[in-house]
Length: 304
Image (cartoon, rainbow, N blue to C red; front, side, top):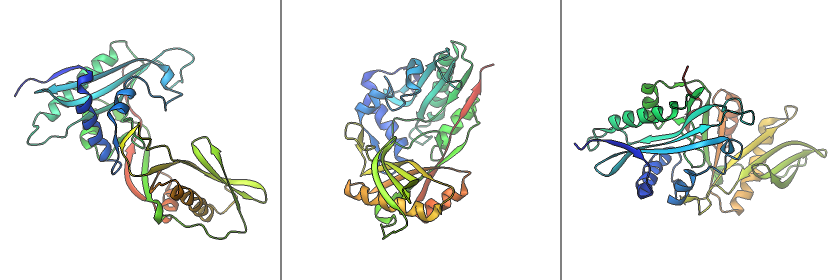
């Protein structure tokens, strides 16, 4: 077998890199695929990360190649060490994402390629002596973050390198919009649609007092960003005052949001919940959501 080579990403790798990334994305969110332009743009900056992206001082993308085939790839970030950077990121290095083919009969060197690339990543990250090294699976795709359960080969590559899961676990849920509750007459609450922080906001009012709101982002499937995505949206915020009946009001808010999504041509809605919040998970399941996967966030390796 020809020798594996780890080298910097070249523009000529763009189609193979996009295919490798989309294979991982498609195992998390059904039917979702990124465009080549989205992948290339994300290597230069991450405009959606408007808080953390300005803190990045260096970006490096590496690939492992064998027989002119991109077998593995990783995107690395280095954060500044100054008072304008958040404490968790200050003087930190990060594997923003790391992807490689799982072992197969036609690719027997998959694990070797992963370990060789991981060693090169750690050499690159630690040469400037960061305070800590983080790792994530934040591909430039909606809803994909942490290390999702459909990627056992990626989690094992991180564990072999010395990374440990120290953060929380997020549950990714999906509901067909047509299976969400339908609006019904309601004298108790009034609903108003406005622009919110994370998309279109629908607020529930009780006696002219705002008691709950939901925000849905219908811009996930922008054609310049997504190569293939049957009408997809996600819940950016869902808040309900503790003093009201959360379950019933949540269903009514979801019904109002679903009606707006149908008018928008959206047929699937994503939601994210803390794996430890059993009450919220049960509420979402009762409303028509199903669990797609769980994503382990917060992987870390000390450099001390």
